[in-house]
Amino acid sequence: MAYEQPRFTPPILIQETAVRELCRLARNGYEHSGKRETFGFLYGVIDSDNRLVVRSARYYRGGTKTRYGITLPVRQARRRRRELARELKLRFLGSFHSHVEVGGHVSRGLSDDDRSTFRQDEEALLELVVFVWAGRRKTLRPTPRSVVAYEPDTGYHYRVRVYAKLSGGIRKTRIKVIRSGVVIVY
Image 1 (cartoon, rainbow, N blue to C red):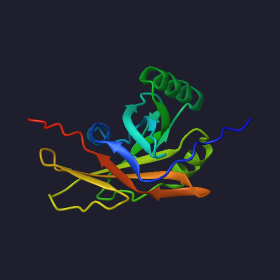
Image 2: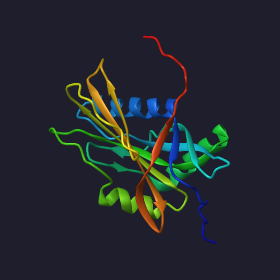
Image 3: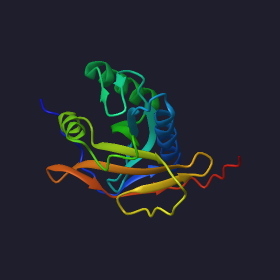
């Protein structure tokens, strides 16, 4: 029996704490010796307006991660993401990975391999990409289809994009951050 994906309506809502965790994980990959992409799972709910709400991002330790890609043991990764869904009491929504700046270049979207892997995963509704690079502070403007951030302490820039299975294909979709209202003092 084929898995039937639930219907949902953009924008994808992401809690601020999940965005912070995604950026932290991308930074860790960027700062790793030789740089490497990061990978993990997204968990959340479908709210009463049929919107996906991402509440948690969890790093996946397995697989092989390089500057340009990730190779995963598919059955082990699926087993782990289901265990986490039960522990968190949240729905598995999809996966995330980072694209790190290498030699002054950062990939701008999903690669062909990213699209193929996402398309083959029947349970995944979303694929989120966190782009990370170092540079001078400049004002990056968010768009309805991206969230941007800058860390003054590190000089790192982040851009978060979400791709969803919509209208019979994979589409970059609108994204909105749910602010926590919590003030963090360093």
